[in-house]
Length: 281
Image 1 (cartoon, rainbow, N blue to C red):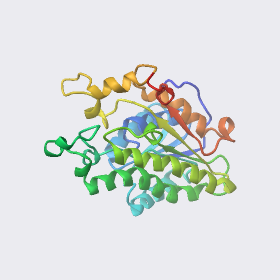
Image 2 (image 1 turned 135 degrees about the horizontal axis):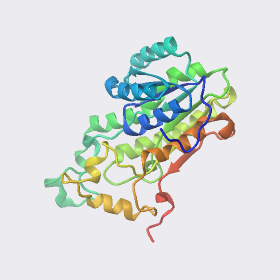
Image 3 (image 1 turned 30 degrees about the vertical axis):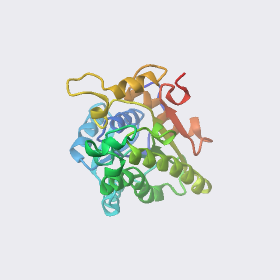
Image 4 (image 1 turned 90 degrees about the vertical axis):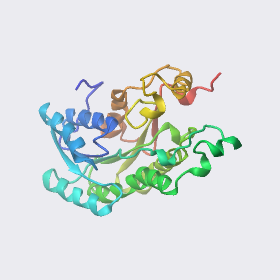
């Protein structure tokens, strides 16, 4: 993998949740290329295994583990396996997350006539909303409870949470996901303060718009043409394009490096092509 720059992560154990996904698998390969021992955790172990195999094939050290970030006993089981294979965690990347159609409205703006022909705010499924919130927030809290204990009393340890630009300004249609990511950003700040006296830094990245399997139905029609939502996104992004997952690597490696960001704590870095800076005029 071609990196924008390298940091020295040799002898570091980096644990990544959601590692079978597009974004976190890319970040896993990057930290593997920097010499880390990479533990790729995912509910779908086969998805994580594919990327672990690629890291090993490129000369790195990696292993995949099945893990449900909503079940503490599952996380603890994965933790025991990582301890046996690699040792204690030095860096935790909480990347598990996502949205769900049951927590998404069909309309951007409510109109009374929509009640009869589309899914409105009033039709959002409670279990769907709870699943989305839990996957993003509880799915970051529980792995931190389990893996951060390894970091106490060690030097150069940190936690990185994957938030979203939704956390700054909520997007239409996806209230649960937006609210959950706002919670992740707030939790990042809380953790930074809470662990500051034991030397564990906590920061985050906030990706803007990246075209992934998770949001494909919102961005692309079945025939591959862009949806109206895609047009609005690109019109509101000064750089006029979606981000590439590789463009998340630089900020992530910066935050992982004690030498580069040792006094950086409690920040969430937007990586959004200027979206947050643009007023629309």
